[in-house]
Amino acid sequence: MSATNLFEAKHNWTHAEVQALFDLPFMDLLFQAQTVHRQNFKHNEVQVSTLLSIKTGACPEDCKYCPQSGHYNTELEKEKLMEVEKVLQEANLAKDKGATRFCMGAAWKHPSEKDFPYVLEMIKGVKKLGLESCVTLGTLNDKQAAMLSEVGLDYYNHNLDTSAEFYNSIITTRSYQDRLDTLDRVRDSGIKLCCGGIMGMGEEQNDRISLLRQLSEMKPHPESVPINMLVKVEGTPMENVEDLDNFEFIRTVAIARILMPKSHVRLSAGREGMNEQMQTLCFMAGANSIFYGEKLLTTPNPEAHKDMQLFSKLGINTETREEHSDEEQTEALLADVQAHQESKVFYDAAK
Image: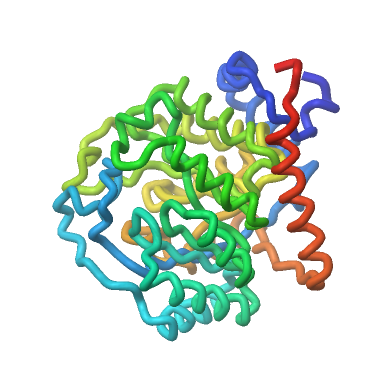
């Protein structure tokens, strides 16, 4: 691969090209990923987000990895939607600890008409605090996506989880196409995408290749790409699945960086089970975003002070949020929408 092609965003990676990356010697792959990373981001800088579960448990979906599913007995305490004021208190605490983005997750198949207005108020409040806002609420219709855009939502999280081929082994209550349709609605409304997957659910390397290719085919690429390691929870069908090899996980992070050079690649769920050395290799592989706080929705996460201690050892700084004028933000959103709409009309004849 030429140096020019190495740093350019492309949307037509072949299976053979991605397989060749997985087959590279480990050090060569990390060198290539770190080189791509430095061409597109400040080195030694990591973006920090905080994730809060604003509505916990009793989800009608049957995702086999998820303790919040109502289909499994994980002894998770079910909670109604949090009050707006309490959510904003948590957002303020997250800001004080150095987070630049506040993410809110609700265990829904889709937002209810009754609760949706409260979520909109949460987003407005988070924005007033000077934080980027992100929500994950399940599937959306056109009206809901438009309303989220109107209140200034920055990111919508909606993971593909795995490959289209392996998907039905994990989830039966929502189709892969349902997820893609929601992502289209979000992008068409001008909201940035946070979209990635979960590794270590018993999938094959071919599934990881397929997932990464699917993500990289999006135009533009998702602005944020969470790479999760499965957190095995007692009571879910995946509590005894075989562990994924750590080097395979790091390879996946590195290839996500190469395939989506301008995206923030987030080292997300599963960090509690990673030692400092593994996390460091993930940063070397191009990961430049993390969630921090004691929990990721309902599963453990390293405490903030431990993350700061590791950053200090590595000489890593936390990314600061750049403030832009309303006009600049509007122009950027319109450009994203136009690029996405054009991608539906035109295609690459060489594919």
